[in-house]
Image (tube, rainbow, N blue to C red; front, side):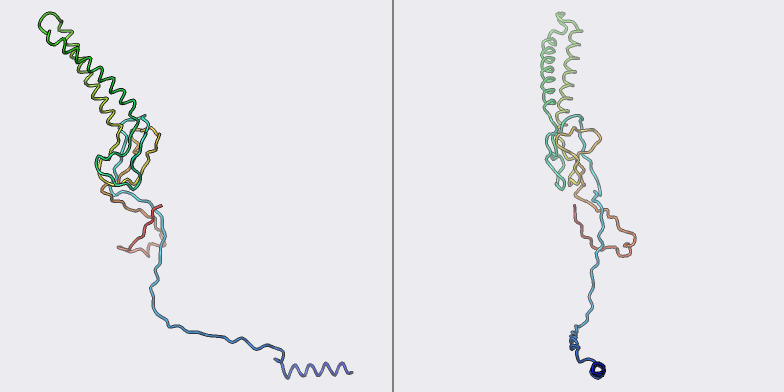
Length: 212
């Protein structure tokens, strides 16, 4: 009976004082700021590649000759006639020395025979053959000099090197460019813009480029 009376008294006390055992609620602190208008800059990140407005290819004039020296790289500004690379010229120089020696012998032979022409001491056939040998030797000298000159690769026009394919030790091949030059340093960017971003692009809008 006493236990039941105590339980009834406890229940009545809870109803009369329901928050007696609860802690006080936290105080909510509110701060205010002044609203203002501001333009947000939205960026569109796209990828692409650089191309020359007017491209000039630089090619080797001779093939199967090793590239021994490269004097420029991507980004180099070059002027017309500037040396860009050098092919191995040892064999070309040796060939020039040989044909120059042949030319000297042919010239001496012709110089000995020409004063005797018409004297009866030398046949006309011998003089004709000496002249032919002299002319052939002279042509071989010109060809060897041209071959040697082609071992030096120069810029055909003023501009900027924007692509380099030349690699030390490679062998030059006719028809394959060693370098590509942007004439007068004019380079354009070709960018791939997603279709859903085209409405955000307008004429004259500034673009920030980063070369990788």
